Every structure is written in C-alpha cells, then in structure tokens.
Amino acid sequence: MARIRAFENAAEEASRGGVSAFGAAAAAAEVRVRGPLHLSTGQEAVAAGVCANLAPTDLLTSTHRGHGHSIAKGASLERMMCELFGRANGTNRGKGGSMHIADFSVGMLGANGVVAAGIAIAVGAAHALRLRGERAVVACFFGDGAVNRGPFLEGLNWAAIHRLPVLFVCEDNRWSATTPTAAMTAGEGALARARGIGVDGLAVDGNDVFAVDAAAAALLSEVRAGGGPRFLHAVTYRIKGHVSVDAAAYRDGKEVARALENDPLALAAARLGETEVRRILDEAQAEVQRALQVAAAAPWPDRASAYADVQDTGAGRWLG
Amino acid sequence: MARLSYAEAACAALERAMRDDARVVVLGEDVGRGGIFGQYRGLQERFGAGRVIDTPISEATIMGAAVGMALAGLVPVVEMRVVDFALCAMDEIVNQAAKARFMLGGQARAGLVARMPIGLWSGSAAQHSQSLEAWFAHVPGLAVVAPATPQDNYALLAAAIACGDPVAYLEHKELWSLAGEVAEDAAVPLGRAAVLREGGDLTLVAWSRTVHAALEAAAQAQRRGIGVEVIDLRTLWPWDRDTVLASCARTGRLLVAHEAVRVGGFGAEIAAEVAETLGIRVKRLGSPRIPVGYAKPLEDEARVDAARLLAAIESFG
Image 1 (cartoon, chains in turn green, purple):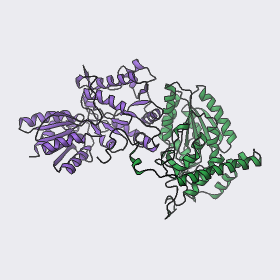
Image 2 (spheres, helix red, strand yellow):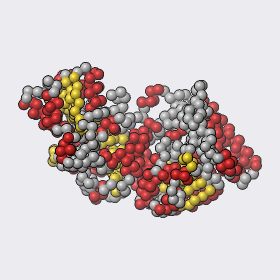
Image 3 (cartoon, helix red, strand yellow):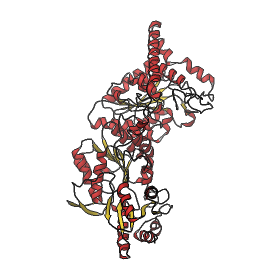
Image 4 (cartoon, helix red, strand yellow):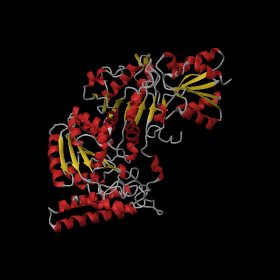
C-alpha cells in the first residue's frame, strides 16, 4: 500500500499541466507524464488485500485506474514509471501509458481504457486456463461504473455457466468520473446484481486491508477449489479527481474529509509499530525516487517503433 | 481433391487446423450444432465441447473472451453469426483485439479469426444483410479477408488461423452452398489476389460474391468486344497492390465493384490508389447508400449484379 501511495503521489506531481480538462490548463513547458492519469490514491487496500492472495502464475485484468493492481501483482515500479514517462524501457515500451500498463511477466494482462472491457478478457483468460488444465485463477478488477455496462452481465454469466476460476473484484470508489455512481445505479448494488447472475460473494470495507485480505482469501479458496467464480464488492473512496488534473470541485468537501479520516494507510499503520511504519514509508519513498530518476534518464522510443507490433500481415503497408 | 461447398470447405480447413494445433478453439452461438449455416458441422463431435464452445448470445463477451484466450495463448476462431451482430462487439474487435499487441508493447498478441458473414441473403433485410468490410479495413492491426470460392475459403481460413494477427474473416451468405473442387494442399497466402480472367481493355476488381457477377459480366462484355480482366482481391487488407497495378497499367481502365455501399466503400481506396499511381480512369460500383429492404424488388435495388456491372463496363466508352 505504501508503495502504491508513493507511486501515485509521484505520478500526480509529474503529471501537473499534462492535460487540459476539468478546467485545468496544459503547461507551456513539457511535462513528464502526458495524458490522462487516473489515480488510485486512497484505494490501495483493495489492490493490496486481493493481490496478497495471488500467486505469480495467477492472472489479473485491471482498469484505467490500475497502477495499484499492477504494483500489488508485482510489476516493477521502475518500468511502470518509465511507461508513464513514455520511455522505451517502460512496461509497454512507451506505447500504452498509464491506461494500458501491462506486465505479462507477473501475470498482469493489462489495464484498459474502456470501462468493463477487462471483464470479458478475464473470462476468456480463465477459460483458456481451464482448457489447458492449469490451476491458476484470474482476478478481474473493475470499478463501480462498470456494473452499468453490458459486459458486466455477459461476463459474469459466462463465468458462472462455465464455472470458471475468476474472482471478480468491484473496487467501488463511488464515483463514475464526475457523477456519483449511486445516482446512476438502480437496485440493490453490485453484489446483489452478481448474486442475481448466480455469482456469490462478499461485501467488504475496501479501506481495511486486513478485511479485504481475509475476504479475498476466503473467496479465492472457493475459486481454487473449483467452485466457480466469486465476487468481492470492496467499498472504498476516490480521494482524488477522475484524472489527476481534476480538482473534483463538484464534490462536497465534507465527503472527502470523512474519507480522509478513513485513509487505508492510516488504518493499517495503526496496527503496526511506529518504527515499522516509518521504515515501510521510507523504503517506498526511496524506491519511487529511484524510479523517477531512472524514468527521467530513460531513452525515448525510436520513432520507427511506432510501426512495430502493429501486425505481421501486411506489415510495411502503412500508407496504402 | 474433393468437391465441397463453400461452407464445407471452411469446415474442413477448421477441422484440419484443430487437428494440427491444440491451441485452436471455436467459440460462438450454436457452434455445437454445426452453426446455423453448417459451417461448423461435426466439429464438436470430433473435438468435444471444450474446444468447440457453445456460448450465450453475448457478442461482446464472445469477442472479448476470445481476446483473453488469445492473450493466454490460444488461437480462437470466433463465430459472430453475421457481421451485423458483430457490431455488438465493436469495442472488443477495434479497441481490444486490433490494438492489444501494439498497446502492450509486443508482450502478447491477440491472434484470432472473427468469422462475420456478410451480404444479401434471401430477404434477410436491413440488419442481416450488410457488407461492412470497409469498417475493418480502416482499423490498424486487423487483416481483412473475403473469399469467393470453396477453394479460397479452405485455403484462406487456414492462412488466417495461422497468421497470428486478428483477422476479420468475411464469408458471403449467398455462397454457403456454392460447390467447387478443393485441394487441401493448395496454399493461398493472405494478401494475394487471383486473376480469374484475362482481358486487355479494362481491369475489374471485385471480391466475395461480386466476383461471380463480375465473371458473368466479363463474359457478356467479351461478346460485345470488350476484354475484361477480372481480379478477385480475396484479401482486402493487405490488398494485392502489385497485381492490381500491373493489370491496370496494361488495360488503362479500372472498375472496382462491391456489394457494400459505394460511399466510403473499400473500392474508393483501391480506385484512389490506382488513380494516384497510374493516372488512369477509374470507376466504382457499389450499392446505393440505402438500407437493404426485405421485399425482393427492394433487396435487388441494393444488389450489384451482372447487368449493373456490364452497364458500368460499357460506360467507360
């Protein structure tokens, strides 16, 4: 959690002036992190609590707000920061940026720029594991906004009828961009919808990493035992705006203040000794500082690489 | 060599691919029963329900799951029933499958074959009759294939499964029962057109069902003293620029014809490329920009047939 928080804070700082939206102006000088940056600040306990229960061979799909999931799954902070900086040695060679970070070497199949798109990919990956007789499972993260998209219904149904090894994790930060999700969502909520499709699960305080860990452990043991998919509804809060330049002035300040009192890092720290907490935070900070230095010094992608990994069939026919 | 229908030829190619490569799987609606056009007949009996996967009516997730399967190392052949239904899976085709390899920096690829039948088919009306090949040709990352014969459906489906890229594979519904000789060892690489008839006065480029109308029109034109060279493009992306340009350089005239709507059709791309390169006269023939109607006279209004082709050939003067 400390590593995720340190990474998000550094990325936020490096993105100032990067995007002109939500009333923010783009900086005249070149910024280090271009493009939309969706921060998971305050949501760290969900990523950490779930991924603590995953093996390196387990797979994971994520969302546009996915830095925490990648870090918790074991992706290198250095290569992730290089990707945010758009450098050639980034996880995606500078081709994806924040919204597409993936690290197949640790089973992280990708963040995704389209809400709910990871659900079908996770289901397909789980289906492939099943067909190949592998024992690994897939953790599929998505936000509260995703429960209003069609792939939520389609993907959960698919996983249920085939009893696929998927843990669906609804990381509910209560905001769909600048709109409160509750105002846009009918019925009894994400878990009730999942149960309606035949996927049972648990709801948990998503800011309590110990509770998330326990719930994920229980659900994943059922998934690993061949019980089919399970659903974890982890309620947390998006402390930052939709993207890093969004000051979220449309929200009630009291709501944010209440959320800050429930900071997942502070909650976890209260259960550890002060020295231990200081050591963890310092180590995370140092690791992120090193990542920033490496990323700032890293080479840009060669322009020719814009033509690499597009397709083999018809490669070279870029103009007609 | 065997005499097979266009549907049977594809089925034979798929059976061979599944036999030779355990990574190849089929998923889609009704595939276990052989598919609604019989193009998967016998495959589930042979390879089991694990590899020939019946799915819910969930086009987005059929395609999205195929992307996930491909990223996890399988080679999915995806049944979309008709291209019109594939529109429910456009995010998964365009934003996910086509982009995955590039966006991921080459860490993985989404090699899959999306079978999305196109075209007019006995009163199927506006939502089951479209030819949307130009949409897919516009998307970097995809290959686009539209076979016209049983032999090509055999060989091109095999090539599409083997190529490792996401392929929009567009069979024509009016061709399912078309029979022809199929040689299992006749390899057809993606991107290679076929010159089906030689002629010195005009080059006629077509694909899919329109190839057959083009051959009919060329025979009629011959009787009127016009020599028409008919090229079956077979693959739309990458299209066989060399073969088309060589022919056009000889004939000095190009007509491109397709059943898709003429406005913004892929014929415009070929005509523009030929005109830019050779400076010769080019014409396009395609459906009017109208939805396909149910009644026969309305459906026929959208049909590019030999009579229309002949009129277009003669209009060069």
